[in-house]
Image 1: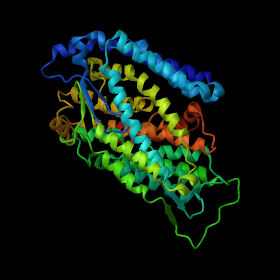
Image 2: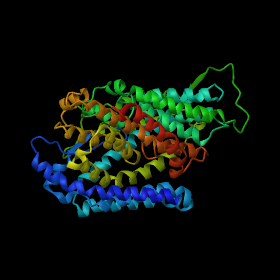
Image 3: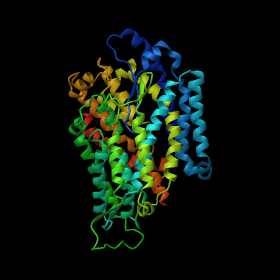
Image 4: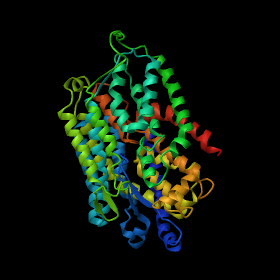
Length: 508
């Protein structure tokens, strides 16, 4: 434990040491090449992938360099990550009693510095908007899916479990990784009652909550942001299909091998031959589910007629959030009571996500801002290759929100070749490979890494923590943050990610 913590600290320290040097170079670069160089963009869209807020951060800092946060302001974010990782393991009682206070305190420290010392209201307000969007979608999906009871009249076998994971990965492209996760996690756990283990949930996070949604923009927030920016709708299906198949195949093989050794602890559940293979209770909630998916597209960047609150260069599509909150209330009010009871509905998982993600959203503001400036600096542009983009976008997507990570890396890649992510025509030309020969490969590397690496940690993607909370609420003891890394992500997922890199990027 100490060894890994020390390595994490040293890695973080090195990152913080490297960031400020290129930041100092960003302003001269902008002054020198203002006519041709597109500077880094602070493009923030939360895990919902529903709203794209774009501002030219480097030119903003060129006019007023005091707006850049100091490197030490990243410390609250690192502290929060370490406490999320170690709290449930080393000081469980204190953590469960006081994590709301700790989370709020660290968030207030960062926000207070931005407003009081930097006189910057824009970044905290942007984070607040993203948080509202994130929680509106999460709450709507959580409550609506809790009112849908899916009963599979099937014995739990490795093949049945693998089939459900594969179906979930496909469905994730149609209703998003968050939607697929919250809809299928409970029937998946019921299917394995009597033999459910932590690895069942971990592979669900790997295959359904992350890797599965890599094919079309609806599947995962970064891809939806790319679509809003100008990447063709079926671009990821065309270019990411083979990495998607390879990753799912390798994960499926490992899962099958693990599951064949699980003999269970209770008597197998009997099959009722008079019942259909799949039975649904609470079908009316599918109307709410369809409304949620439709609300995703109510975005002022897609349709000019959508009203929005605007502040500076940002916009907030409040209509979508009102619809989502309305669906949440109606789904709870008119939910089938039997379905809610069998799903063991509780507000506890949602409460935990609400509180912890306040801290994650609030404290990661300076980290995202510094990374954004670094990505567009001379040093950042010099380091841009498809291999560096794969590992860079992947590593940051593991611990930061993968949506702004994706957009910042795409913006940096385009800026290095004189194109602008804010121009739809430039983005389309970039995705088509017309800008420079390796443009398609670089965009593919960013797209695949941003989605796949989200499964490396519990906080890499929004559904991960929610699935973990639902599993723990049902009584299953899930691995801690570090245990998840050491037992599953590093020995199982990381080799898959390396294999994908070797096959599709390393020698391309």
